[in-house]
Length: 300
Ligand code: 0X9
Ligand code: ZN
Image 1 (cartoon, rainbow, N blue to C red):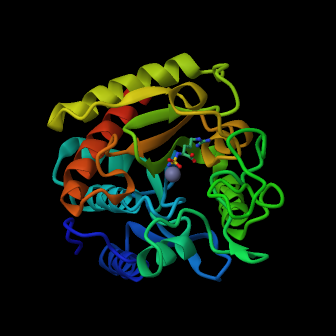
Image 2 (image 1 turned 90 degrees about the vertical axis):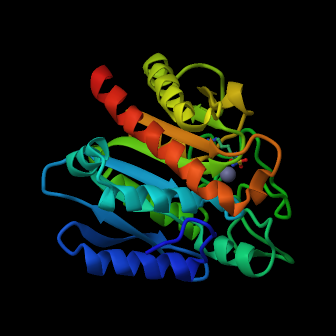
């Protein structure tokens, strides 16, 4: 089992997924959400206690230097499979969970082995490398917060869905799209809960419900350690940015509730969040997800 006091490598995470598949054969199945430029599978698991359930989708690690994202997704996975808490057990049983801790595996390996602050994928472009996978999705591609310069950390790529990671993952999402009630994308940092869209401060159709649900969930998040979060539309809470996964999922898959977490912290350590914050970050995030589910049911 996983220790929550250090960050795992990609191999470590994938070996742990193999253990879960072996240990919970009736509940856990291996899923592959796509493939990376360097031909690594985007591996995940589906947790299902039976047919006919609606689904919750967890997307981690699209930005490779944000190590707390895969770590938190792994903790949530572990809770869903082994917690004794009644609310957690119902959440695990009432939904099919599609969970991908590392959606940018090449970048994650690069960040662990070569350059800690690597954000993008690892496709070579001329003399440089990498497309920002959270600028490459086909919604208002290149419009805001995106660069045409391949050496930029916000390089959007030569075209929408030019990258194997975003292209294959998006078609996987589409293939199960009509089952998904809740889609969560995990980033760091800033302690924000972001709601589509990133191209304008104009609210999405169910924006007010989404904000209400999100604020209540962030209330639940803060109970354990007092961690404050700000909830809002991407463009107003952080900056204008297009081509991100959640906007595409909201607009083209029509998932009713879609959020992007910017996990701990606010400013002190940033991407280099110390490993002793993995556990508290994960616990409070799990608290908020249970509340999201609870509130989503109330709002219908
Ligand atoms: O810029 C980003 O991609 C995210 N911030 S980060 O510091 N983790 O890079 C914010 C993304 C919010 N926008 C969308 N998801 N569309
Ligand atoms: Zn990010």
